[in-house]
Length: 206
Image (cartoon, rainbow, N blue to C red):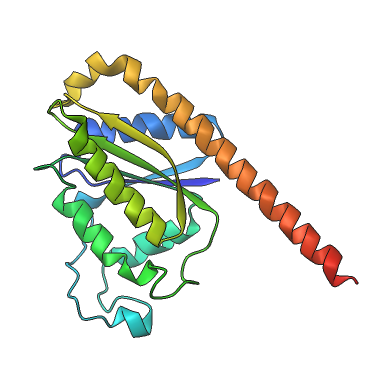
């Protein structure tokens, strides 16, 4: 099982990447091979709105999105994480999502392999959970367009710096359960697929 974890934070040593690494460690413990992508270190151009991808099924731009797209296709689990900036996802994450348009089911419903799952992560400095919920719903909207099944959410408030995570040990323990749930979801999907394939083979012999 492969997990691809994407950080949208411009702070490459902040709380968001710290949480992703903690989640990545828990995913490794339950059998996932993990890779973390930091969007701020990638070269990703803005979507130009040219709509060429609607006919070509790929973006005309040649940058890191080509590599990232292949990693998404090859992953079983996709994790998206962003801090809340002005009540929304970061600019880095927004550009990434916009550039995933060629993967949307309304352009090509065969562009993405099926049976993938997704986890959403949001962190903010303030106290209101509603801002984080907006980010989590944004990620799940994205997942739905790529036919990725959302299976878990993780939200932290009152985290302004990485040091604030020391006060969130109880919440961070939930990452272990999230990882275990992801492993169970993947095993159930693979089991379901095997049963379907065996059934189709059985029917084809008649």
